[in-house]
Amino acid sequence: MLSIMPLELITEAEARTLLHPHLPALRACFENAWEDWRELEPALVRKAPQYRTTSRANVMYDLLSARLVDEFADEPGVTFNTNAGFLALTFGGRLVVRFKKFRSKSLKVSQIMTLQQRRLARQELDLEMNATTVIAGYLLDTLGANLKKLAVVCPLNGENVWEIALDDAAGGLAELVTLPIPDSGGPKKPGVRSRRPQTKPQAEKE
Image (cartoon, rainbow, N blue to C red; front, side):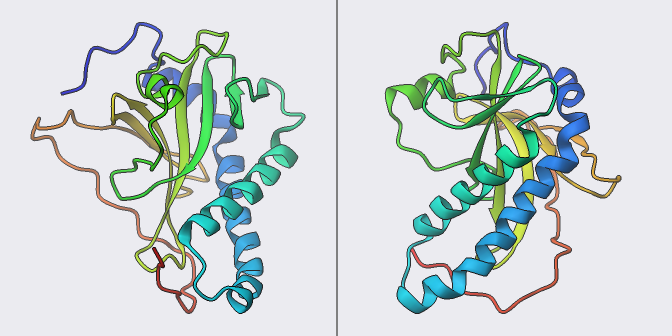
């Protein structure tokens, strides 16, 4: 069961209101960064055929960061936050969005549980504002060849409280999904099938 949410935790409705105008741009940043990676990948394969998936994730993070800076540098109501040592976008002073790779369809991320990460997991990190930290991330297909899902999730104590899918089915706007509390027996949200054209996949290398 999820523990009681902090009073400062942003509501689903407020998060959607803040992100609504920016969802198409966020999705485009992910998709363009992935295309940037696909352009770089052949050279990496030639030099290091057994490159690690962590290498891909690190390069993807840098490419995505560059896209985000270009897209949001002069966007009203959006600021860049690096106070905690990571790149994040702050929307309306209430929503701090980090950027990560999801490790599975549960939309959770891999991370070393430092003191900072534990405080982030409990929404206790002091960001010098009354804000909630959320994660905008991407999930790859089984072969690691294509983007399978893009979403923004609100983590708390190891579980996601809500999820906003960066789905362009409604003109680039997303639907809001409140996730069932674990063991509640609530229905699970079905996955989203990628509509991107299939390319020759390269198997995951751990």
